[in-house]
Length: 332
Image 1: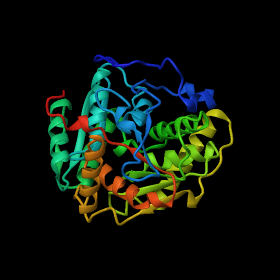
Image 2: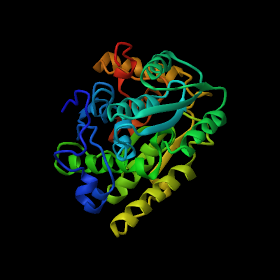
Image 3: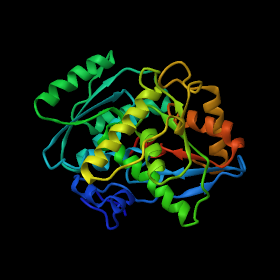
Image 4: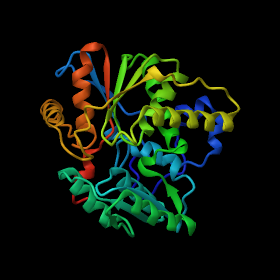
C-alpha cells in the first residue's frame, strides 16, 4: 500500500504483537509500514546466509525506523509539534521528520556533528529540506539541551534512534513477524540474526520478541557507536523496560531476555561514528554486485560485514535496516 502523502491510522491486518496481546491496541499507533517484509536467500555469497528486506518496509522511507515510528508518532495530530535529536546525517531524524510532516506536524531536529560520509551528507541535505528547524551543534549535549527547551514548551519527544520502550514495541513486533514466517514454513529458522547496534532499540526488541516466541535465536549487534551507548547493560535494560510496558498494559507475564541471547561485536565500530571501514566497504560492494542492494557505510555495511564473517557458524539472517532511497537527492 502506497500512502500518497497521507498516513493511515490503522492497518487492515493487525500486527502480530497486537494479535498476541490485544490490549496493546489501546496504545495509539499510526500505520506506516507494509508488513511482513520478505526474507530472501544470499546463497551466492554464503550458503547459510539470508536477508530480511526491511528496506521494503514503507514508502517513502523504509528500513527499521518506520517500525518504531508507528508507535512513537501515534499521538501526533495536525499542528502537533514534534522534536527529536540525532547526528548530522541521521536516518532516524529524516524518517521521523518525513512521517511527522505527513501527519501535519511541525518538526524540530537538534543535530550534532559527525564524521561525514557520502550517505550521511545526502541524508543531511534531505533533513534540511523536510524539517522546520534543524540546527547542527558542536556537541551531543548542546543538541539535547536545545531539544529540552522544546520539550518544556510541550513538543512531542521522539528519542534518538526511536529507542524507547514505546518505539521498541515495533521491533518486538518485527521478531514476532519473523516467527510467523518461520512457523508457516516460508523461512528457515536462523540460529543468529545480525543487526547494526546504535541506540539499541532494534536489538533489544528482536531479542525480547524471540524470547516471547520461544525461538532460540541469538541477536548479534555490530557496534557502530561509542561503547558508552552500545553496551550490553543498555540493550538488556531497554528490553526489560519494554517487557514491563507490555506487562503493565496487558496484565501478561513475559519471559526475560537472557544475557546470552545478545552478542555485541565491538570491532565493527571503526573508531568513529560514521567512519567507513574496509570490511564494510568490501561487504557492501559484494552485496551490490550480487543483488543491486545498496548499503550505507555508517550502519548496514558494517553489520553485513559481520554477517559474512559469522555465516559459517550456521543459518544466519542479516536484517537490512537501511533503505537506500534515503540517498535520493530528488526525494522530498
